[in-house]
Image (cartoon, rainbow, N blue to C red; front, side):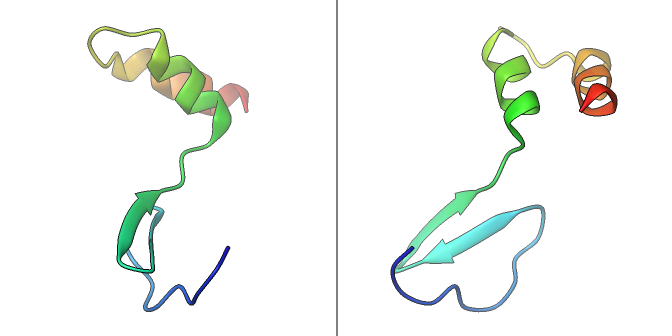
Length: 50
């Protein structure tokens, strides 16, 4: 990563060189890619299995 991260942000958000982006655990990102609508129970299950 180039530059400094600046002050901490909420919920895994980072800011670097004027761009904001969020860190999402791989297992949750993979689960979300399979959904048309967010399925909270499926996301909780994926989180608990990680």
